[in-house]
Length: 170
Image 1: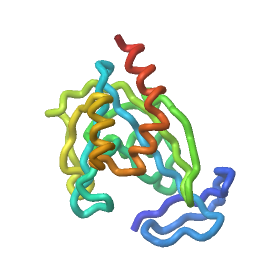
Image 2: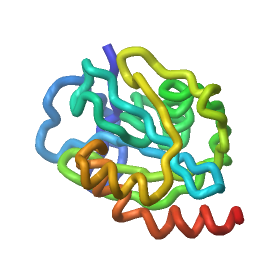
Image 3: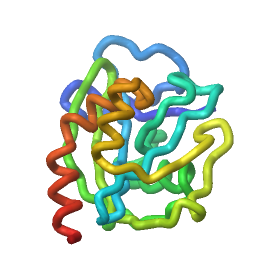
Image 4: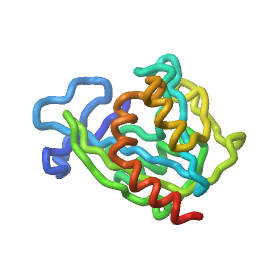
């Protein structure tokens, strides 16, 4: 069984925990973290969701729910390592922004990590493929509904920030 910390609407910890997979009560919020991994050459790393997950076969960035007791940075370090095998330090991540939707607080990160695709280690039951894609390819994938709609909206909100970071690497 996995538990998540419960936050209030203002993102204060309540001292209570929530059992993953059960419904959130009104006024309870969890924390989800996401990261856009970029290579400094104009590409983003996407992974494909395994068939047994929600939105099966769609492409996304890495991320997931913070476990009880984890900070946002601890959660993103763990999620990225679990889903891709990429081992990054907390200080390597850059916070792009935060948000709230439904019963979830979100933290959105980016990370420069030009890892060769053959070094990506996928997590069975979570991810079944990975690839580097250019920004125009991401747009095509969104149009073709190959990218989960939640991730597509996130990309559209953060594209300019990501492009700035990419261009800083040139």
